[in-house]
Length: 251
Image (cartoon, rainbow, N blue to C red; front, side, top):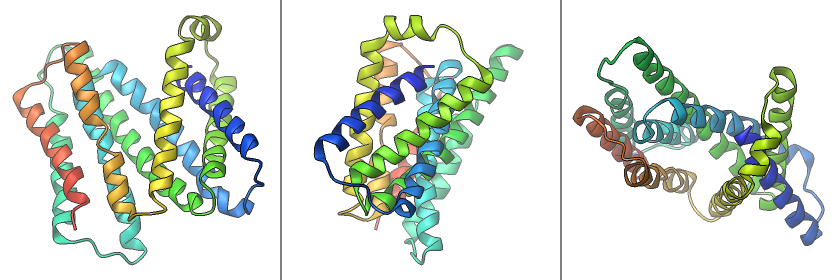
């Protein structure tokens, strides 16, 4: 419900922006990648939020950030040839994921949650990486319409999931948490818009990696506000995952 409300608020905001500009939509075919990206993005967000809820934030966030490898792989398939340092970055990021996922045994339920959070974080990584590719393709035609296509498709998928699986407490949550959710929706929309705009002026690999450095802020906030602590081997894994993300962008 948190994802649906925050994404819905962002969708309303981009509708207002598109209407205020008054420009017609580009070719529908050119918006299809953004729509697919929107569905992948909300699936990634849902998995990511769930992983944060049941796992350790400072472990989950760097794992999710390794989704930046997806744009690199897509680039290679399209004819790009990454430098050896970029290939090393992908390897380092994978090693980081393995190390960061190591938890001290602390009961069956805790271990189960730890494994589940890592799995969800990996799903989020794939979804985020797919989003980075899809939105960039459509943003070449028009940034605002690409945002509208992705956000509209994402919200539609969330609504369909809500109808199928149902949810409870949505009205109470909307009243109690409207402004925080509005802030989340606005910040997410602004970040996506800036990323889409940046991809029109720079290489996908560089922009995608820069956009994937958000775990730094997540880790700092988790440490400052929640007092989270990680084991030494996990801290090494977190550092490796972040180092891999940076190396992937190296030229």
